[in-house]
Length: 619
View (tube, rainbow, N blue to C red):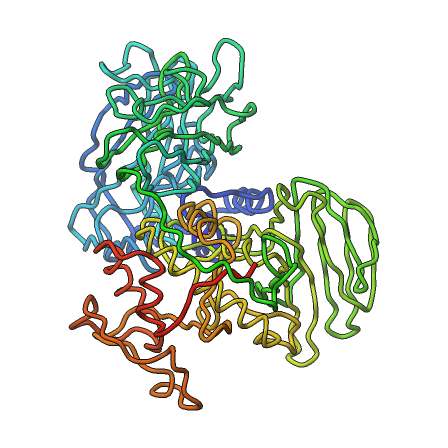
């Protein structure tokens, strides 16, 4: 939470709260700008009142005059002695920060992507600075493209409390190309922030191809050009192993791919490209960079650890017996209905391609494009859909259906699901059809996704992309069996009109973006398409869990009820000495990963945890 100051003739400075969607990039609205400007129109509290508790004296700075080349970055540090009576802190309600102040709180011409906000360079470096001690503030300055002499004034502020008396300081900045550092090959004015990559690492066989996607945001001051004299390109990094992964789709040995369109500052571009694994097995870290003819883009690097192994054939001794329950459903399997989330807010749906809106009886209402907003009244039970000035109201639910299901992916712009391990990722994109439906049984409004079983499995998030391939094949086969079993019994949530939810109560599912993050899991789905676990010729339930304490549990040991002869306790030696994590019935993911690392195949992994079973083709 970042706060902005406001003030009045009869009150001490206060702060207005504002929440930001991204911890690296902040957006300031016009309303907030007006509020900030209003603060400086009022007289502040007296200097004596302000400095009694909050005051400072500058004692050191890293440079008397900042000298930097046009469009380049430079770090600056300033130190202050705390001459007040209050301890400065880095966090909490009254954290101390540097702000612009020339002559008022405003956006800086030297703002860098590392700043929390373009008028807020940095917080206090130390955790605490007691009265009499010295605190430091370090931040990056991003120089304008035009050479010249500039000045910028800053001041310290104690959040929600007061400016720090005596802390205003002015930087004398000289921008000249003669200050370019030796060996600095960055392109002036170009700066990038990597937003998303569909893989953090890869496991490939020799000669295998991999499709990669990486997105960058232009956080510099220069527009990236697709063509012309200064095109921006993705290239293999110099003096790196990247060329060993050259693919026939590359333009040449120097160019992996061009950016698809011009990208203005603040915009995002996504590049799709392919790699071919080298013929020699080993561990590699190919690195790629964005570059213009004037140099590489600061922050435009993309490095990917790749484990290359000697190619081995996939064992295929599966009984090709078709289970009658799914005969004729097609190669992608029967449709599965997933309750994505419930909400009381409007649901905003967007798609890059055209899509249909159907009524509750699957009759066409309208063909749409772009953004549609669905609002539900919990008092009148009416649904209202708006799209580009068009509006439709009905007492019954509706369905949104892509006209090109293979290529059109829905984005839920009103939904945020970001992983803690990479907050730049948002799992808010989904394949298939979407329905907005109210359940009178639970009084909840749900967004429901309906899609073929194989497409559902592509979005599973039950393992990482880097787990062993044989474990991934075993896992998705167990997951497919579980999903189809739930489908056969009429779903687990019939009163809410869907089969499964997206969390561990059923199976962890993150949709289309998970496919980009976990391409190896997608490949495991394709490798095992239609395969399921059966016992005595019948499809059965296949629970699995995270980790055992050295043995799995039988069905009756955990859940009682009738005996499930394929779910009995078996040793899990890779889990020995560890703590049970999960219900304990069926396959232990931790032990199965160990078995796969030992060279055990996916079908043998399944047959170990599910006693007496067979692997059969359901469709």
